[in-house]
Image (cartoon, rainbow over all chains, first blue to last red; front, side, top):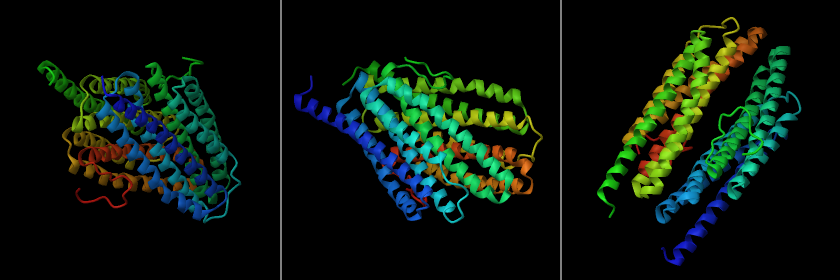
Amino acid sequence: MQPEHTDKRYEEELKKLREDILYMGGLVEDQIQKAVKSLVERDSPLAETIIQRDHEVNRMDVEIDDLCLRLLALHQPAGKDLRFITTGLKITTDLERMGDMAVNICERALELNLEPQLKPYIDIPRMARIAERMIRESLDAFVREDTDLALKVCKDDQEVDDLNGQIFRETISFMIEDPHTINRAMKIGFISKYLERIADHATNIAEMVIFMVKGKSIRHIKEIPQSI
Amino acid sequence: MQPEHTDKRYEEELKKLREDILYMGGLVEDQIQKAVKSLVERDSPLAETIIQRDHEVNRMDVEIDDLCLRLLALHQPAGKDLRFITTGLKITTDLERMGDMAVNICERALELNLEPQLKPYIDIPRMARIAERMIRESLDAFVREDTDLALKVCKDDQEVDDLNGQIFRETISFMIEDPHTINRAMKIGFISKYLERIADHATNIAEMVIFMVKGKSIRHIKEIPQSI
């Protein structure tokens, strides 16, 4: 039996882990939202700011990893807590890579903002909103151990994939009609792909939450179950 | 002090963790090599086989995760071992995603094999060979805790990025010259991008190895140091 102050310290650190992961998720969500804003509103200084701010996402990644290692080393958790902390370790990697995707969106936005606009952006902001919601909900599912919400995130991924397919077909028709648009159309296609990858990362988090709670893997199942 | 048989068991399980990760790496390497072969040799049945075999990669991912959790729960390692095991947990996620990229290459190969070949594939197999070597070397760096080798992997990533840029420019000129090639050229561009992402995952592993051994993060440093 450990002394009471250690238990209290442990609970506080677990609480901090939950809060830190939610904070990092909020930061990444904001990075993505502003990255897309810098494209839609052709705001290159905003894109530069977002690229600079990526170091904050990376700092959170390192901090949360350290906290997880400290929890494992000092408190030697077992069972549910152990699974929670190791899932936390994996989630930060996904969040960090989503942050990189936001940087990539900004880089393409900076290039596109130098040329005349090919078309108004409608589907890209729509994709971004769904992807941002998926991040938020996957992390809520994690901290609340809510597998229903996690399943919803897995299902929502289809919507993002469909929008990505639609944008892909649209960019191809632009290119066929006028080869002068090829460069710009490709870049819009890349941005769509980055958003699709962000949604994939959120889906990965949701899958890990289901695995953490149920001990069941739903990865690579073609048909997502109604409930598990 | 734990009884001797527990120590022996622990050492055996740690050894198994190293072996399993190397085995999973070898499997992923083989998946990528054969995926590219199915493209270059227009061998669609091979592509189908590789897609089917992805479940083996996923199975290894779940198995290694379980082993890591067991090691953490039963032996409560600290210090160097703790860092090694938690890095192992993260590495399997990267390997599993590389396996997904091999599947994506096969899917595009199946589509491309239905149409006349646009051009002989020269740079794609070259990229694949470098990416495969990067996987092998990043995992060797992990099990041997060899930061010099890990740094080499980070540097090699530039070569893959350059080849990807070259293929991107080449596909654009195909498309401009003849819009009938757009669909095929885009798919070749995607395959190049998948290989670039595989190399990125290997680089991520190498960065984690450096962090594991030195406690220093070299992520997002523009200039890779000569030594650390």
